Length: 194
Image (cartoon, rainbow, N blue to C red; front, top):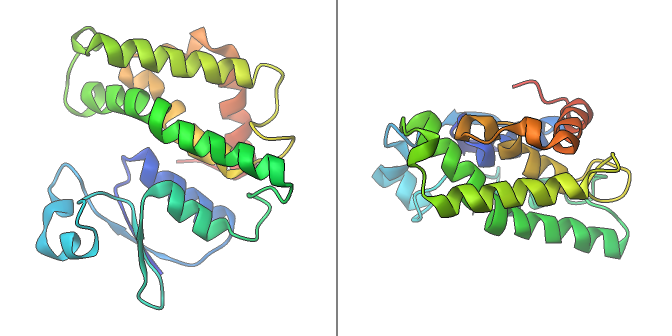
């Protein structure tokens, strides 16, 4: 299979980390958002939304959207809890990540780290909601461990992607000590080094 992804994107990295953790063979095709690779006719034919990541399976099937991809890759693995309630909690975190975390933490990071804005130039709503997301996450992991039960799940992989680099968006992770411990634990458990 082929994974089209931009190495600066947390959404792409969580797909890479999931595939690596599960030992799945793939070809990584670097597809730069800033360089316009996602706007070429060939790429838009695969994903008309012009977004990475995109995965092309060996049978030719194409799938976009990072959380859909990691769910597909991890099906039947320990990264998806077998308990019905815990599986639903994992999904709850995946939906929350894309709606209430990524649009603020990742957007702040992109604007500060890649577009050169200062944190003071960010829209107040982005900063306020990013801090709110980090505070909620900090509370969720204050007792240690992982987001769902006592094992690493896709919820952890999805949320660690942008949380671990939130400082690049002007968020001070020292304000979220439980999040800092959780990041270190997830990075160890998922063997994340990049």
